[in-house]
Image 1 (cartoon, rainbow, N blue to C red):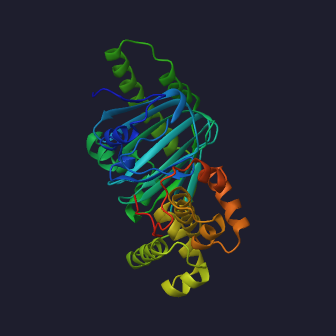
Image 2: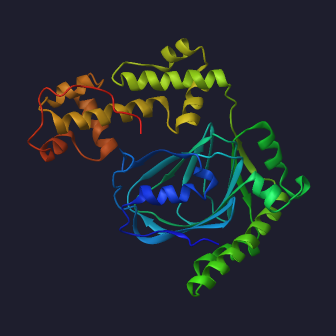
Image 3: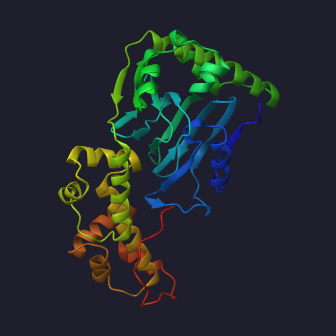
Length: 357
């Protein structure tokens, strides 16, 4: 069993840690699509500010295709990560403290006391995880592939929850909760109290993880889970949603409405709104706002343009609306960014959309 991957307070080389986690966690095996930390998009390879104020996270590859996360930490700032899995997978998560949110397609789920949240995914499905700054999170989760359950553990179909088989057969993303038994809850709590030398600790964690998986699968198979089903998006509709994203990125300042985009893509309002959120983790409006305000931040740092002109260039007719949106998004005023900018700003800096991470 390989050594666990540790994320500790003061860790700034999180891109390297994420690359290591990607190798063992089915939930992100196809890579990280984007990270937003404190409302700021993080560029790949650049240092990410400290994630934890205190505490730790351990990621264990229990067996090939089965990954365990143990987290007991206080998140420093709001944190949002969108990632894609490359195989049919399922994640089971038990939270003792702190509520995290997950979004994929029209589905969404958050943690609830004494219940286990589940997330069933087909290959290529992006999922966005959201955590709140200043909140103490204490949870454990198991992520595994379909091939691990069927081939690694040699489980037959009648030994798996029916919802797993039906969701995977339809290629749908499904999220929800199911109640767990007292033995399973007590068993999960033992991850936070194991005291042993390094080698024995890893062995204890492996034994606990496999037995917890057995208990959770039993509870899930005998429960009536609360589920949130996804909507179905065809390949043609996915291509149209990509065109919408490209159109926004080409000119974030353009005045776009859902009605206009619905007419262009020949998609109804619900499918466009939820389909875009399913694909990219945020709504059309949120995506456009993020691009606009990132451009505004860049212009504040690199030019001497008046705030009112920057507002106009980035799609805001009223400077007061721009200032309010900027303050809500970044928690600072435009003038504060300007006052902290370097004196080497170029007044003639060109306006162009930021590259996708």
